[in-house]
Length: 368
Image 1 (tube, rainbow, N blue to C red):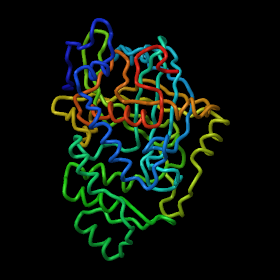
Image 2 (image 1 turned 30 degrees about the vertical axis):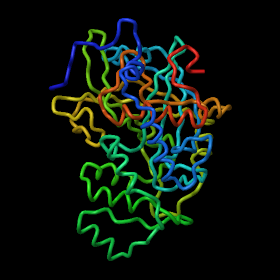
Image 3 (image 1 turned 30 degrees about the horizontal axis):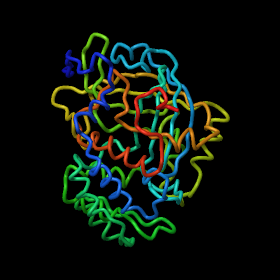
Image 4 (image 1 turned 90 degrees about the vertical axis):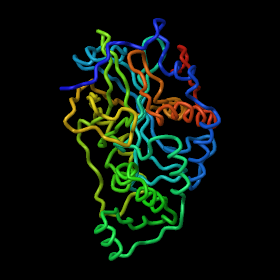
């Protein structure tokens, strides 16, 4: 094993969260953050005022997280100390807008908030996409200029065959009622930029889960965790469903709306469980580029079990009003220098301000 260990901790003695220090260092440009959100909204079919521009449609669930026995030896964050921690989870479809297309091949989201004992919180935002498709903000703007909505053009079988022979992903046939698509622009961008190919190709082939509780979710960024002995390690997190990953039949006609009802029915009968897995980076791994995967040989630690108990009765409070942010981290976890992760701090705040969600604070009332 050749893991990257650094015994020098950068936490302030007063315990100031790392996200606050990032804001103090001027990493977040409010005008750039607002521009990021505006670019996203511009490419949506029908943005909904007062709601999230992407991952618009979702469902809030409550549960408990209990860390494994070994978790505390790797990270001092409170939710890894072995005591049960209340959690709020919001599952969502990646598409923006009011139309629900649960059966479409699309990225799904799982945003988790760990409610800490002092009233603060630590968030973990993950999606079914294992790698991102751009390395920095400038590339995201470039991608957005190309990946615009356009009339859907069905590709002939012989053209699909030609794409495969050129090692390109052929266009899928449009879904019923699908008249516009961003796929063609995204694939064109991937053809021109090698770093984007893995993430964009994954989006095109990701499929639709039979349940929000039967998908694996990945926090694509690298974070630094601090152990009780002061050793810091670069890590990546993912949620693995205990019930296993299962997608719908790609040859069957897609259903428009089933994921929320399925989750409600599932949780009425029994809890749904996820394992939180933490992969430890080693020397030579890319720490600040979310487009590059780490080798499958890296050590993975089971950090704990998330048990989802019920769908929240008050969806507004338990899901829609919560403003998750990947930079809201408990002491013991710090963000890496990943430019996309830095940008998300401000972009999520800009989006929150547009829809009136809970502000980014580090006070006991933050989780309310």
